[in-house]
Image 1 (cartoon, rainbow, N blue to C red):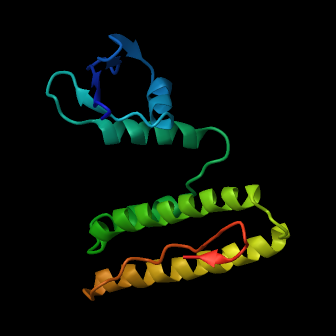
Image 2 (cartoon, one colour):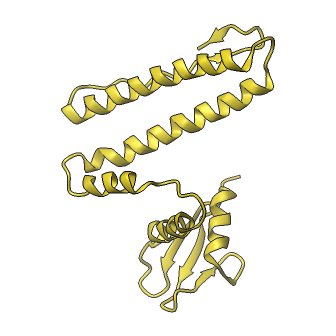
Length: 169
């Protein structure tokens, strides 16, 4: 069954109205929708303009203010410098691919921890680090190929290990 798009209206008083449950919600509840994998859009109640990105950035900004920030000042400065740069269009997809590789590796690590058939954690971490490095180098090559106009190949998928401990690809 296809998931329907949930519409949240943002009013001039900055209140958010979830049309699916016919109730006002908080920014924290919008964050929970993200965590739950809900598909939604935030729209200006008057103009219909899509405000989803600005609301998501607001959530990130609030979470960066509290606790240990994920985005350092140096990282944010680098990102700001890409605005207006000739490579600005490549930065978003590059960051998305990098994060997806990280998420794939995180899931693979969790799976391998659950299937530690005779391996020590250190040997498994060493193997995973080597594979991560190979994938990262390939991604960087692809990014540079796109930036210079050379044809690219998709990055190799990391090898996984079956129950026998042999790599499969």
